[in-house]
Image 1 (cartoon, rainbow, N blue to C red):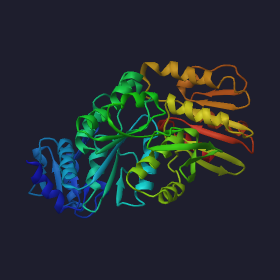
Image 2 (image 1 turned 180 degrees about the vertical axis):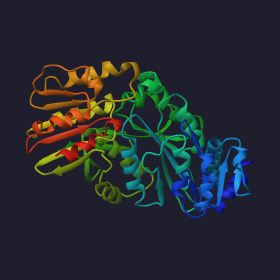
Image 3 (image 1 turned 30 degrees about the vertical axis):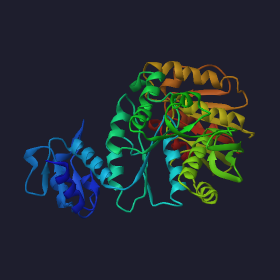
Image 4 (image 1 turned 90 degrees about the vertical axis):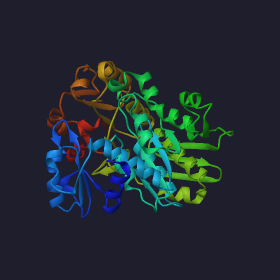
Length: 427
């Protein structure tokens, strides 16, 4: 079936759905498959729940003309998203990187939405399914689209770029994330740089933080818009950065006091400033957008619970983001500091070494109490009196009443699978 024909079905619908339990009236249901599910089996249920059409890829589930049979439902979804993107008069910014993608995306949205009808990836729907769904949420009224692209192996960013066809791109950083899939740090750099390759081959533009020497070098021959700290030759020169503990930056005649914790978030803010200025958002509106952005969803949140102050950064973790969060935590002038750190996942053969490095990184900070949680950290336990090691969260939970004193300042960080936000219920 031709893409244009499927697109006509999409135009008659009220939007895309991939879960038959979340159908809204006149949705176009797409029957996707996974290791443990087959969406074709739920196509009839989707129609009964209000879907107008259902895209399927197994002939036995085609009952009538409301069921659209294709060779592969996922490919059809991706092709549909690409076709839709090319019908819209819209500027798309593609965003990837090892750390900070979602926060940066939200900051860029906070700035651009001050001037344009802007839509962006919802949550972290940034994979081979999420990117098409993001594109299909854009419509003729959308002026700016921000598409977050995640990846855990080579060629994935390349494929996502082919679908969304970004006009601009930004890579937050190259860090030690998804090392197992990428095959090490060099693999991460190569995989994320597929965004640069797409933009270069299509004569498009990149935003670059020139303080990052690797990114600066990789983009020297590309069309680029640059920013940096004390870098007067750049398009945007950030003249001051402070964390106390919230990030404050200054550029030109403007001071922005954010609600974000940690020096590592300064670059995310600086990127949003740069992108806003390139698209003609005034300094006043950039300031308004960024100062009114409040982090949520366990990302760099500063909370208070009873007598304790908490940096909750438990959405995800890898060696790079953990190192940055701890470096910031060490520098904060607070009393009774406690770090609750969970295992870092998807590190492959480098997992043991990276967990050991992190324990060693904390070793000489005797003024801080460290609680390491998870089997990977537990394998590197030691007798340091300010460090405790728990193989499971349940073990930590059992010991918790004796672990945290009142008026403590806590950092809570670990991979998503550790669900360390559960610590809040113990306080």
